[in-house]
Picture 1 (cartoon, rainbow, N blue to C red):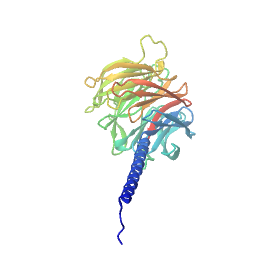
Picture 2: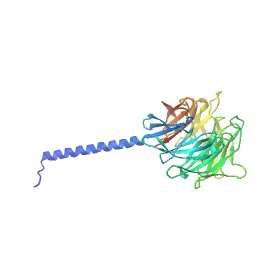
Picture 3: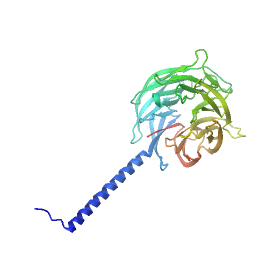
Picture 4: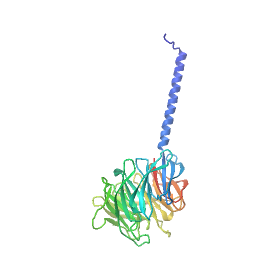
Length: 389
C-alpha cells in the first residue's frame, strides 16, 4: 500500500535533510580547518655546541612557538639540515679531534621526535656545515679542521649513502685563526656544475667541478686549485647566489665584510664588484660575520653581524648586483651564531649562542624589513636552525 505523504511529513523530511546537510558542511569545514592548521605548522630543529639537538613546534600563521625540548643527544651537532621532500633531518658530528660524520634521523611528524637512521663518515675532521643539493640528492659538507669538503650520496629513502668524494686544501693567513685551511661552507652554483667553498683559513673561495650524476667534486685544474683570492685576513665564511645567477655574495667572518662578485659560469671565474663593511662606522670591538641568506624572491640579503649582535638587511639591485643597507636591528641575544628563514619566507629564527636563546623575527616580504616578535626560547648554546614540515 502506498504511503501517504502529508504536508507535515514533507516538512519533517525537509528539516531532517537540512540538518544533515548542515552537519556535513560543519564537518567539512572542520576538516578543512584542521588540514589548514596542519599545513601551517612545522618543526624547527636547532643544532647546538652542546651534545644535543632541540626542537620547536611553530605555527607559521600565528607565529606561536611551543618548545618541544631535546630530541637527540650524544653528538656535537653544531649544524643541522633537512631533506627538501622527506621528513628526514641531517646533523653533523663536529668533533675536531676525529673524522666527522653525518647522521640521518627520521622525523616523527606528530611530536617532532627523532629516530636515528644511519651515520656515514665525511672523510674530514670537524664537519661544520651541510648543504643538500636537491637535483642530485647529494649532501655536501665542509670539514673545518681538516680544510676539506666532502660529497655524500643520499638514498631515495633519505638515508645517507656512500661518501663519494673529499678534497682537501692547504693555505694560511695573517690571523692566529688562519694557520691552516678551514673550509666553512659549500654552495652549488645556479648551473649545477660547480661548487664554491669559502675557506676561512686560506682567504680563498675554492671552485670545484660538481657532477650531479655521480655526486662527485673534482679539481678544475690539475696543477693549481681554482680559487678567488680575498684580501689577507678576510676569513670568508659563506657564499650565496643572487636571483639572476650572475652574482655571488661572500660574507667574511674575520674582517666582517660583504663582497659582491660577478660569476661567469662559462669560465668558472669570479670578479669583484663591490665590498661593504657589515659593522657600523666607529665600532671598535671584535668584528665577526656569521650567517647570510637571500630572501625567497632574491630582492634582499640578510646578514648576521656577530660582533655587534645585530641583523643587517640589504636591498639587492639585480641589474648591477650591488647592495645598499636597508635596516639594522638587534639580534635578540648575545653572539648570534646562525639563523634561517623558514620555508614560508615570513619568519627568521636566530640562534644566539652566548645568551643561549633562539629569537624570532617577522619578515615583511614587501619591504624586506624585520620586526622582532619578542618571542625567545631558551636553548643551550644554539648554533644552527632548519625546518621540517
